[in-house]
Image 1: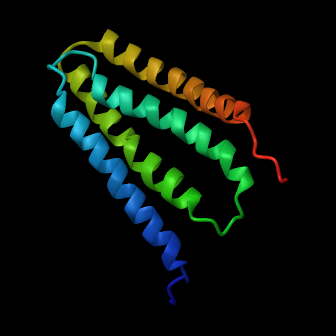
Image 2: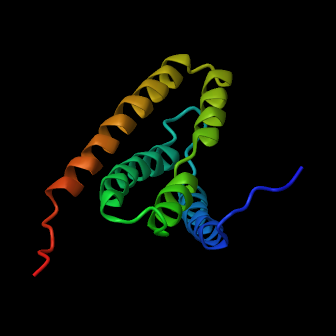
Length: 135
């Protein structure tokens, strides 16, 4: 079985963006650890911020050629590691395990609903951005 050819520049862009996004997320989680049984604000904040950025970047990528490094660095790299579905799952498990099922349910529903809204908001903000003229 032969390995698939990969664009090393895109892999490097994903790696560098991933390191940046992960460092931001972990730094916030360590700086503001939520008490047990409470709303996990650091993860919620990075997920909402990442959803907003992802929507904005997604809309702006239409102006970039496919071989551009913008998508792998900003979208897959930074937003992919800044936002964290796995931490969301662990926090939901902990909330349920701590007996705050109502908060866990609310956290899950609000995260998904507002995450979608923030993606849409990011797309809308990018579409309102003034365009440079080709003059």
